[in-house]
Length: 252
Ligand code: ADP
Ligand code: MG
Image 1 (cartoon, rainbow, N blue to C red):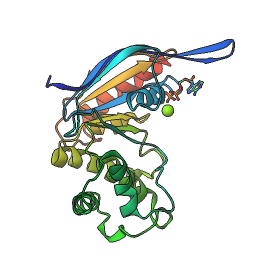
Image 2: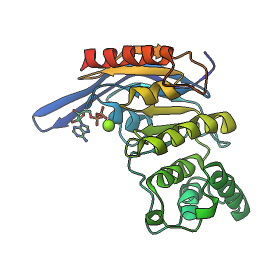
Image 3: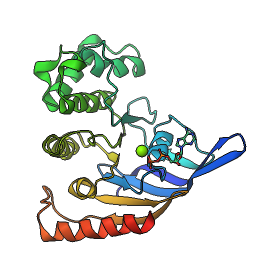
């Protein structure tokens, strides 16, 4: 495997609420290599979102370590997050949403450089014509594309996505999945994505990490060797989908 961009070692987390304790993660370890697309699957409530939030720095683990390669020039590790609900600021235009985090995370970046980066991301996500639109003027798919563009603006070492396309219709969803593959190709981005949809995972992922609950442990890691673009009607694809579905059901 190439140099890992992310390495999880024994990530453990228990939620406590007074007397009650709810163990969520019990020693999660795996690595994600540069330019890999890794999907995380597992039964509902098994701790997938919790794990992603911990990696993204939005929550903390009780035990375990996270080693992360740096994504930017100042050497600071960076992960960017895309949520199921677009989480764009409704009072900012698409352009301003995209550059918002960039302004915060990179101090004194010249306005010219900010504009250049925003324009290339608008182009990449086919949103150039909507740069000055507000989120409520966009379709669901466009909102998620804008969220992806915003996350990519800080040039993260890894893009963390928590069921990012699950609120979209089937056709829009497939379009966005194709964009993930294209963005990986163009920008050499690394993706770690939670999905509950086996077809989506097999369509996209180099590897699928299957968690079993609860508390979650890594129960399987499946390498998907099918060439891109993948065809869900391909018998090999269908066989893998059945295998993944069995693996997840067995762990529920
Ligand atoms: P998934 O994303 O796999 O559906 P989550 O990571 O959201 O699962 O949740 C895993 C478990 O942790 C669930 O049992 C959930 O109820 C619990 N949990 C998640 N967040 C919190 C929290 N902030 N406080 C208490 N329990 C939580
Ligand atoms: Mg979740």
